[in-house]
Length: 365
Ligand code: NAD
Ligand code: ZN
Image 1 (cartoon, rainbow, N blue to C red):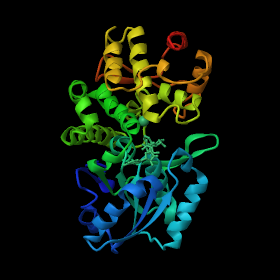
Image 2: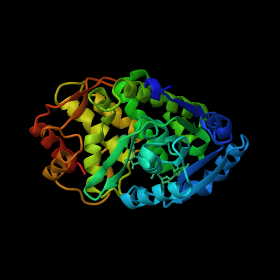
Image 3: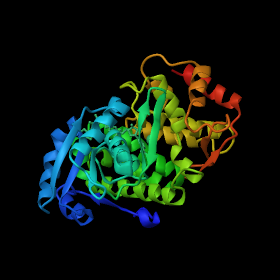
């Protein structure tokens, strides 16, 4: 459960949840119908299962399938979506269902936030990244020409259904990108979970359902707990950005393209954050190699050398970091760590330390 008082909601995690979607969603509905927003790839693979699952409880659905990919998270497709929902006469008490990855969850959640000043929505995340991160917590929105996620609203879902079976069709690269966020939770606040991931990560990636359920569950517990404490990111919620200040700069440097997926930026960013923590004498010198070793053992990206093509120089990367949405009064927010599972938020990282870290990391490419 995400404990947010009147806006509290449950996260259901398990196998076969699409088949049970009708019984899980029907109690929330005044009328037995929902409007589903999805993307074409997810629709091909999972929309029939959702339709059948809803039908078992007599719930009917209509679906809008948008093109897959980050480029869809824009103002125009948002307008199209709102228009489609209004054409279907979606009312205040109806529910919008987001079936897909973070792109669909963010866009459909934002459409629900602004439609009739806010209608309810259900998240059915189908990527690992969405199951452990974006579907929980209520951040919704789209990208602007000026930057990523610059238009949006906090709008909590009424229910989250994380069907582990949906991950079976996810390409391995996408799976590992989401797994970076799983590792992030261990690194930021749960050393036992990180130990467990070191042991079980390979089985989990190979398809072990029990391990996948446990990893999604622990990740959601940690996110739910942090969000309940700090819904609108005045403080602790920033811990969830471990690895993200570096990661966002790298995503921006590679144009949010196939060169670097979000989670790939996060794993490289986590490795850099631990390296920086060691250089500043905050954590033990061997901790960064332990972190990087787990990413490497999983076949994930762990350093700047794993990014194909040209990158800006250290000053260029620093300039991109300074553009991050989280910059307040000119000071960059960093998440550093005193050890595995001991992250903290800080605003005072000397520019020279950052500059030499990035210069060395670039030289090692
Ligand atoms: P995505 O939604 O683009 O999904 C990745 C790809 O996988 C897409 O091509 C999609 O069609 C495909 N796909 C989805 N489910 C599938 C399945 N089960 N089988 C086969 N293919 C499938 O990307 P994502 O990584 O899920 O999410 C990234 C987005 O999430 C970014 O826009 C990011 O800004 C956002 N995000 C939001 C939050 C938040 O708190 N709201 C947090 C983290 C990330
Ligand atoms: Zn992330």
